[in-house]
Length: 365
Length: 186
Image 1 (tube, rainbow over the protein chains, first blue to last red):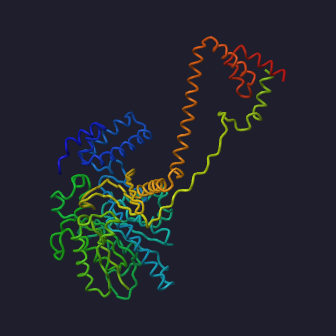
Image 2 (cartoon, one colour):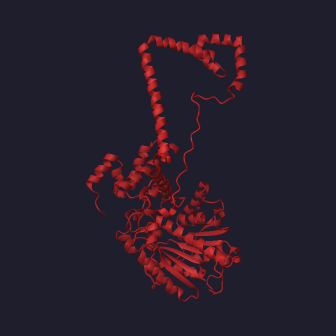
Image 3 (cartoon, rainbow over the protein chains, first blue to last red):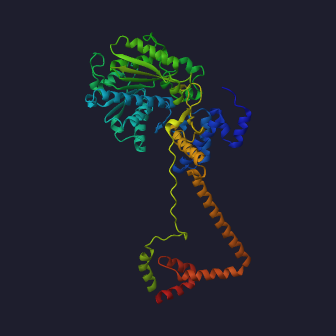
C-alpha cells in the first residue's frame, strides 16, 4: 500500500481533525471527505432519533475510529444502496457490490428481451406459469429484491427464490425484504413472490444438516420435478438462474489482492469456496461453485444463467467449463463474458483489464 | 364581566377569517420556465468506481457519477450520496441547469431563481437597515420615545378583540378598565 504523503495528512488535519483518522482506510482525501460527510449525517440523525447521553460528536468520533481500523462503512452505517433499494448490512453477511448491481440490471434487461421475443413468436402458452428466478448464494438478498423491483412492472406473475447456506444471511435477507416493503421500494406482492430457503449449493456435507440444493428445490417446487431425468422435450421450468458465489482463491485471499477490510471483517464463507479435496479434478478449487451451478443450470434447463466471476481469466474458464459440460447435452446454448465490449465496460464503470466479469449463458431454442 | 362574556361569544366570528401576522400581502410567485429536457443521446454517463479489481475482493464506497454533455462539453461530477442511481439523478438535474444557463443566459431557470433570491435578500437587508436606523434614532431622542410607546399602547388597547382580551388585561393592568367601559358602550 503506497504511503500517504505527509502534506496530504497536514491538509486533512487542517480541514477537519477527523479526516486524518479516516485517511488511514480511505487513502485519498476525496473519499475520506465523502465518508466523513456520510458518517456525520448518520451520527446527527442517530443522536436525534435515539435518546442517549452521548452527543453526535462523540458518536461520530467513535464511528471514525472504527472505520480507521478497516471496519466497513456499510457495517457502521448499517445499509448500502443497491439500485433504488436500501439493503441492510450486518457483520457476517457479504456487503453488496456495485458490480453485482450491474449484473442484476443486465440480467433483468435480458429477461425482458427474452420474454418479448418469446411473445412475438408464440403468443399463447408462455403466460401459463409465472416467471421463475433462482438466485444462489443470495447473502443479503440484494439480487432477488432488485430483480423483483425491476421485473415487477413487466410480468404478471413472478416467483423468485433466494438460496443461501448461512442462517444469518437468510435472516437478513428476509429482513431486507420487509425493510424495502416498508420503504415502498418494492411492490406489496414482493412479500409473496420472493422466498428465501436454506440449502447447500455444493451439497457436499455428509451429516445432512443442510439440505442440498436439489432436494430443497424438489420440496419447494414439486413442479420442477424430474431434476435428474433429462428428457430432451421437457419444457424449461426456470427462466433465470443467477448467482454471485464465493470465487476468491486461497492465494488471492492472502496475497494482498483482497483488501484488508474485506479479509478481516467480511465473512470468508461468502468469499472463498471451501476446499473439497478430491472429486473435483476437472476444475480449479476456486471454480467449484461454477461447476455445481452450471450442472444445475443444465438440469433445470435454465433459459438464462448469469454468474459473477472474479476476473476475465476466471470468466473465460467458466465459459470453457460450460462448453465441456454442455457438449454432452442435446440443447444448444451460447456462453459469453459480459461486459467484454468497450462500450459495455465504460457504461457500467468496469475497468478495461482488471476487475470482476460476468458470464451470461443463453439457451437457444 | 358582562362585556367579557360578550367578547367571548363574538370571538369565533371575528376569528373566522384567517388572520395574517404579516402586513405584506402574499403575491403568488411567477411560474419558473420549465426545466430543460436533456436528450439521452447527447450525454455519456460514467460511473467512476476507480481502478483495480472490484467485485468481492474490494469493498468500494466510491459511487461517483460523471456526466458529459457532448454538444456543449459540460462535465458534471456528483458524489453527493452513496447511491449511484441517486447520484446520476442529481447529476442530470445539475447538468440540465448548467446547459440551460449556457444556452439562455439571463433568461434561464437558474438565473431567474438567483435573481429572485437576490432581490429578496436585498429587500430584507433594506428592512433590517431601516429597523436599526429607527432604533438608533429612538435612542437619540430618549424620553420622547417612551411617550410614544405609551401612545402605542393606548391605540392598541382600543383595538383589543376576542380571545386577546384577557391577555391584554393582564399586561396592561389598570388600563383594562377603559377597555371594559368601551365594551359596555358598544
